[in-house]
Image (cartoon, rainbow, N blue to C red):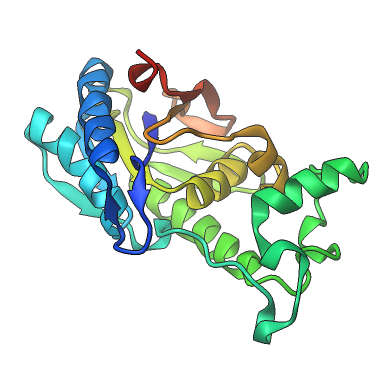
Length: 221
């Protein structure tokens, strides 16, 4: 199975929709995604992700299914406790690197930047949701890896339209990397495409493969 993660197009965050540029980007992404053999389209329920997904759904003639847990992450101080950069994960990742901190620390959520940050709970919601979704698609999480339980001829390529934060949380979990490390590693452009391939052989303990990351060539023309 292949999961095609797509970030939404350029947004109007206040109105939770795409800008005119974002609409163009979504159409360019849809044309690019025709090459991937997508059989199902899933999306965050947020308007900017749904509008981006709609462009591809129209081209491929597929319905859009929603995944509530893939809505954008919520960050900021718990109970309005002041924290660095208002808890912004990408700013925090940059600051951790400047201070020489280990971005891939397994205990990242307990450090000074995240201990009182609402984003930790949001990340956990994505981790729980992505594992439940993958289980429905044939992959059960066991420890660090995924057991594969469906026949080889039942594999699909699915597209998942979401956000920079929620996709980073999902990818970090699937690939066994820390969330701040993934924030630092992937600065995905609008409609950027990242593809993960799951093992097609029945069995236990398979490690997903990263095929492509942050591909935005379709909007760089």
